[in-house]
Length: 180
Image (cartoon, rainbow, N blue to C red; front, side, top):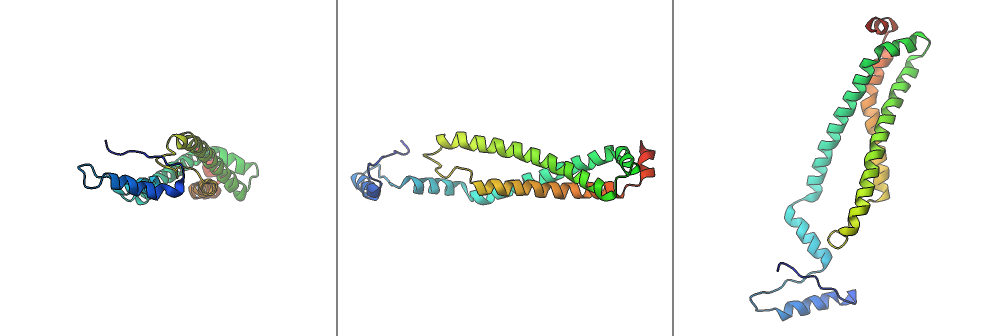
């Protein structure tokens, strides 16, 4: 047996109960080291390593990959539609209107992807947190992290959309129509 779970009626007596259990098995072949559940979970996580650093590094890699994929998608979308953008400019759209149109497309794509991902994350965390409540009582999704995630999605939209939008804005009508 690796470990036992002992429930106490009064949480204020948890330390006393832990000492009593340890005294019971003192000087035996099977000595115990009783700890509160939160302390046990924390010690167990520390055995794995610096979880916060590992998670942060994974998230940075994922964010950078998403940045590259989204930027490539937006650049390709503008390249494929140079003719249509030229027609828009020919019928009177200004450079700033074309810039706003491409930026709006970037924001919609990033917001839809972010909303889908965040919605799935909230659902999974809600469903899984009930089962993991005894081992990981801190497994939940705080509302301010949701707002931060939405802000990151919008930042991603601006960063990935600005360069294709500037390229679309600088597009000359004659060059665009020649590519059609």
